[in-house]
Amino acid sequence: MCGIYGYLGHRNGVKIALDGLKRIEYRGYDSAGLAAITEGKLEYFKEVGKLSELERLVGDLSSPTVIAHTRWATHGRVTRENAHPQLDESKNIAVVFNGIIENYQLLKEKLQQEGVTFVSETDTEVLPHLIARIYDGDFLKAVQQALLLLHGSYACAILHRDHPNEMIVAAHSCPLVIGMAAQETFVSSDPNALVHHTREVIYLSDGEVAKITLEGVEIFDATLAQISKETEQILHSVEETTKGNFEHYTLKEIFEQPQTIRNAMLSRFFEEYGTVAIDGLHISASDLLSIKRFLIVSCGTSFHAGLVAGYMLEDLAGVPTQVEISSEFRYKNPIVQEGTFVIAISQSGETADTIAAVREIKAKGAKILAVCNVQGSTLAREADNTLFLRAGPEIGVCSTKAFTSQLAVLSLFALLMARTKHMSKLEGQNFLHSLQKLPEQVQRVLDLAPQIEKIAKKYSRYDHFFFLGRRYMYPTALEAALKLKEIAYVNANGYPAGEMKHGPIALIDEECPTVALCADKVTFDKLLSNLMEVKARHGKVIAIAHEGAKGLENTVDEVIYVPDTTDELAPILSTVAAQLFAYYVAKERGAEIDRPRNLAKSVTVE
Ligand code: AGP
Image 1 (cartoon, rainbow, N blue to C red):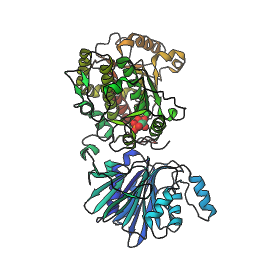
Image 2: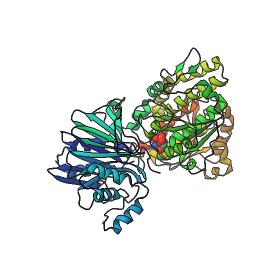
Image 3: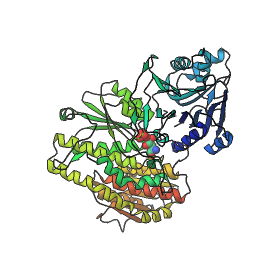
């Protein structure tokens, strides 16, 4: 996802903006650029590659009015011309942009017919040209009118050479946060890049445009009327956005999980009644009882959390649950029957496919519960209720602590549903007791890191793996496989163990090891048979199993025992072991880990 940063104030904004881009590097990018107004000139620099290239180009430039950008290519190759800022022909207007202009071809053709020369392949370039053609001295009006011509989702920051003490920013279905401090204003697509300057922020909503000057921030709605917006406080601390003593953010976030799972559950349950009370969940017991089915929409790791939640809602609460991949669901003609309750799971709250699916479903009248980690995110603002993970910023591109916190809060919600329907107080208390033991049990899995690292090193040379599991361990296998794909670039295939005999077992040989997620007691014996079938075909097997599992030692090649818990909660403990396995394989293979190639932390484009 592209990153935007802007500064307007009394200090040298160039250094501040470059530092801001470094704080959002984790989101992934392939080029970077910056525009600044200094001594009546609009200077701009851009280059493919890392931020260090841009820093070299910028040298000791100083300016109080700066916009900057990291680009993750969507329209147009990774070239200098396609990097941002994009400018008009007269080089008076500079734009940095995140999102997609869906009608850019039409706009581009019309501008070209009017004689405009384009220099890039990007959709963004239409915007500075449109502003230039409308501009008659009123910078804000020209931007507002140009934006009304765009269809799509975007966040942008814009400078005009003739307005050295002004910056115009706008957002539509893409995050943009404005940070206010004494005599200076910061703009970013990510609150993590502002928190060390100010905690007082405004999140721009869809269609809003802000005019930033040394006097402060004025905000206008889509009808160009000036509006007033509440400022909010960023709650997380600066140290949560640094690596501390860890080599990678990813490892730090794996080791944060005992605390993040504790945070996810903090003051959200009543032991005495064996039930749940979730802050911000304004849903009455009668509303819960009126739910006839659940529909869960999400992507990637969040989809895997949705699959686990689906099993829990059916097993514990007895409510039929449909779990959908957002990018598929949004193109179905979704049948959203009466009594459908939708859960949208998204760590970032900015995943375009999930937001689009939610909008489609809302249009059909369903209520939306967001499970999200970012305050002020698009999804959190559009949902009827939001269950925040409280996991703190997740900087590593591959999701780790957010996943286990998603499972923790979804377990609480499933317990709430179950206790509202038929689960007894004692059963509720027992389930809560298992939940409360998780942080200490996760710590015990983390204590296995040396053993897991040894096994990972031994198997790090393989380029192909199967990850197998049944029932609650099937989504766990999918998630474990995704980790290895993402950070070690290994072809890891998550699969339901019972399906192997229907074809994929043909791929098993001594060069294709299997990681078996065994911690589902209901299906353990069946899984053991599957592992024997794998061994019979010379496949090596690494088992991740619950303490007390019998019969593995003389069947598989390696065993990692994690603490025993209920089947519903087993995905949390097994996943932490799998995260460590993926991390140490990636490290042994010399992979980038925090910022894997081709990936972005939040996929805000289709
Ligand atoms: C997870 O490791 C991946 N980085 C990716 O699959 C991610 O889970 C997916 O893009 C969904 O992101 P979200 O949770 O922010 O919606």
